[in-house]
Image (cartoon, rainbow, N blue to C red; front, top):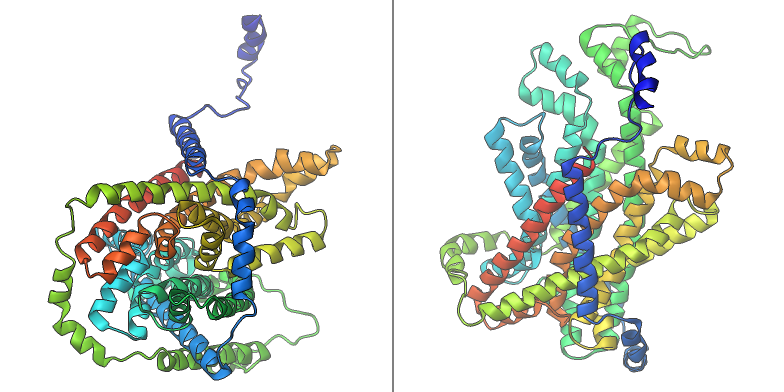
Length: 577
């Protein structure tokens, strides 16, 4: 039958039938097995840690007792409160600024289209990965020994760690630019620096600012954790209150951090949205820029009510641009940014005289951390590292299960109505505003010390970022497929599972892997407040000056994070191939 059916096609010379489904690839099958293995590991961790709702229900009595000891909240005097909040924001702004400035040359070397060569690109990528893999709390412990008390410790710890994220996103933005303007500048004899300044920077600047603002949100929450290792501001005040069991003051300060996180998220989110809109508009005008650089004429639509500009008018506009409302607004933004940076440098209490002492003590300080402790405690540290990995896996599973429906209802093209989408966007924003350390403290009170508190805290905290990423991925799918299914009479649920989910699935897997990577580092940090894992040993080692143990914890955590990072890179490459 098959031969008979295919013979006419061969005789008439028509094209052979094409496959409707792509042939399975070995890489795709391997990626599916890895994803299933990670899912199985997460389920195993969830069961091995004995995470269940009964634990939460049994802890309601502890929660009620904690609330009784917490309420009413005890806020410090308004002057002291504003001083702590101002110092925290100043340290966070300075740290983000340092990271952004360092990330620009690193990203230029790391980007495929602007690198100086293979060696430079490899070195820059290594810097990005290492910066991401080293926990900022470990950097804070090292810098605290070098610089002592003051904002400089927090600025450098958060700033250097942030290079891992900011540098990577900066490099991705550079690789996605329109090469037309840069090519035209090179053809006109422009140097490499001129190509970067005139052909690359104008295109990526909105994306750079948006990335830095996003990192600012993250650093604000991280600053609370660093308060437990000596970084000043609200985090240190919270740590001091909890050490003395002054829960009324500690939770009052934590509520201030929550309000700051929500406020900064709202403001930075609005700015990011506006900047990314400007970037798309500039991309639309890139043809005009290329035409101006190459001398070629590009079609321009001139409104009928306007007089075409003469050559002298165009020359005057080029030499002395008019101060339009948009230009005045942009100038105002840059002036406000400069004032904020100047105020932050002053408010962070940075003593540049500490650099001299740090340079003098640099060698002796590093000698304290080497060699790593590999004695009788190594087996115990490996066991706690496994607990930390279990916490991260279980928390990622909890976050993914909760974030998928919440993120779907927050997506404009999936939610039943705009009001529902707006409500769940608010839920995601509220969850993101709560630092994971505060959630860990609450769950430690409810469930007691140990890994259960850490897993639940990270799981709930993951809903904030993962829910937002899920909603954004669902909104970015091709709407044409959804409309085609609706035209055939499919209902909302059928459209969601047949058209929306398949398109967003690769992005969802990538987001979950990113959340797992983040949770591994966060699980280490939450151990500082008794939420299980290796972080508890890290804090104790720094307090009793066992710096060899700190180095061992760093190396073990670095190895695990690097493994997950490489696995995530490979999976993302396969999924997007």
